[in-house]
Length: 360
Image (tube, rainbow, N blue to C red; front, side, top):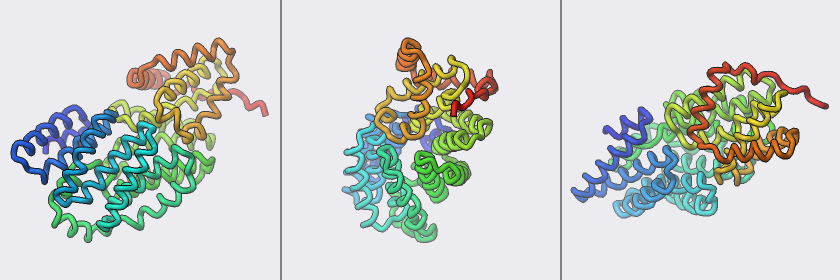
């Protein structure tokens, strides 16, 4: 359909318009077989665009429709969407409830792919709450619960509504994407725990798999962590390249979720700069990042970036620190991302490589 084509082009506004047309048509014909999947697709688009209330509205409507027509696996996916929207809103308790309910359905219906998807959504939630060990253990088990492709093909033949839903779901929900997503979780968790070699290995695999799957949104998410891991390994030029690539993708496709992850990470490039103005820039951008509850309430970003930014902040005079934080909190997210990309292209990243000597 045209909605799918629009989403493949990462045109969220056009995809939303097309899916709304399909939903209206399904309502006119009272065809609930496609109304539920249409609402589910609309929820995915809203989630991608960062319109979390609209996402929750669409997903909450599709859950009972899928349940009523016997597409319980569709309801499980919808509950994963609900959980993701709550997770990105830093509403962790309702996220747990939705994900747990979805996992219960997926296991009952014996659909390994949906179980894997919901497990990975929960792993991302766990990492925000510093549950790195549990997230790592669960992500490692994911490849073992993904259905054999031949069995899944037979499974979909008898569930036309679910086939429709898979067709309009994000690329990371397919087998290669799920594998890349799992590696991404492993990489982010290793990064937060200071296991940089492991992080690099997992994240390189994640980027490759997600790129193969065609999921640019989650590829940018993985590239962000890969850049941070490279930076911690002293590979500054490589880190700069990965973070710039992530930012270029985010700005081009206007993906909300990876921007939430990149904004608190990219200031690390400035945090240990010799020039005070660049350290102020790091503090400013981190202050902007923390205006989002998802960042402010997440231990993940505190463990990866917060300590380094605090060191940069400690080197500024109190009035300079307050001014930088105030400037950051006043910034617009998308305007800043676009402006930052222009700045980085003009600089060619030169000027970011001069690091203050380690006092130890």
